[in-house]
Length: 66
Image (tube, rainbow, N blue to C red):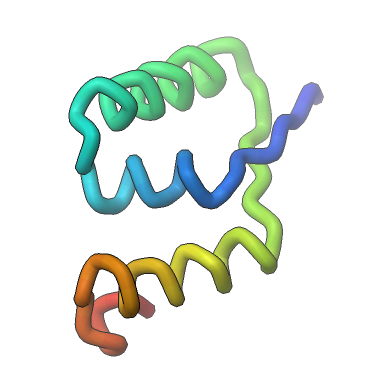
C-alpha cells in the first residue's frame, strides 16, 4: 500500500478551515488519496505542532485542541 505524509499546514487547514481555497484543496486531496487506497500518515511532530498552533495562533482552548 502506498503511503504519504501530510504536514502541519495541511492538518491545520483541515481542522480550522481557514483560507477557504486551501482548506477545500486539502479536503479534496485527502478524498482523492482515500479513493486511490493511499495511506495518510501524520507524524508525532506534526501532531504536536498542530496542537500548539491551535492554542497559540487560533486561540483554541487546550481541552478542545486535544
